[in-house]
Image (cartoon, rainbow, N blue to C red; front, side):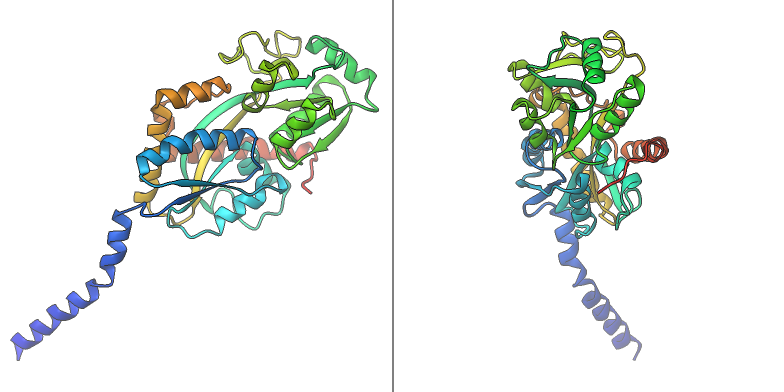
Length: 329
């Protein structure tokens, strides 16, 4: 009786393994179909622009198309929620930034946790803020611009990609540091805001180089200063805020890539490898640097590095945003 019993056990073990084989094969074959990258802002903004540059190179590494899905609204929180609810299978990934993955947590009662409900994939890039204005605004430098704001506080306006976005937070600090007051005009993304700045419907923006520099180079708007302690390679003729007379107004805007919590590590590693390959590509690096981006060194491109940086930024900025009493809509 012992021999038949052993044979039955072996057969049972074989049957139990069969259902696991397709799942294992699918995991090993990742990706086997197109991937969706959710951009939590409308087309034309800095995050969307960076996503489209990276996707071209990432799809070559992964061997599958990566489809951009723009899901704007509520400062990026709607699009981030779309990623939080997705299956953790690597086929829905989300790009985000300081606004969508840090500031929003201090502004909204979110139905997800920005730290606990996502797995970090990679830090992508960072860039300073740049103070830009409509072409015909009667000021030629930052000092003259601040004086103009003080003289026109009843009608001056700053455009921002949404309530509580980095641009809005920077604007609140700009008012405090310069003693100015003006109206905030919010949009559903940096692209629409920039369109109105070019059309002279608003007076200025505290924006990112990736959105602003193409318009500055085209002569459609003017730039007063970059909010960093050194001039940027992509626009060496634009002075720093310190050089322009406003020391201490230094801010960095960064981009990262995340997947839903529970995504297998092997899939995260595959996506991370695709990001690293893209950031090492000479053409990609040139295009990103042309937009004023600073790329992280290889040691800071690991998932763990983004996780640690994300946590540190949250601990730094949440008290500041709450103290500014900015409220999400």
